[in-house]
Image (cartoon, rainbow, N blue to C red):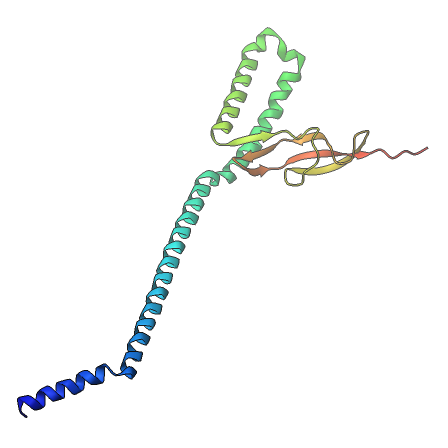
Length: 185
């Protein structure tokens, strides 16, 4: 093969590349590549968003675990607090314990009560008021209905205090609710 033939052969190859059929293939490849790039970008963005969402969910679960992990222990302490309150009320309501000889004992009881309330506050445990409010099954547990002059469904007696742990119900208040008296003439 001589030089002239080689040049002609190269020209033929170049002409083949520049034919219209070959030009149609290249844009299709470019379009396919652009679509592939868009798909990969979309997958990457979705993966990053999913990763960020998982991170937020994990952080929220971690915060909740820290905030509410002591709920079972807190319920047990509430039983102790109820029993202490009953015992304290025996002392406070009995006139014989109001004498000077029991003054120090009463002072000690009041200090224990205050310390218990402070400990509850530090740990996010708060009692909530039920008396005189409309019965709410999310916060109250009705033990009975009592006929009353008040409208139906008002808490008229609190048998046991209800408590919240931060923003969640720890224990519902045990209550008696009103039932409108029926007129029997």
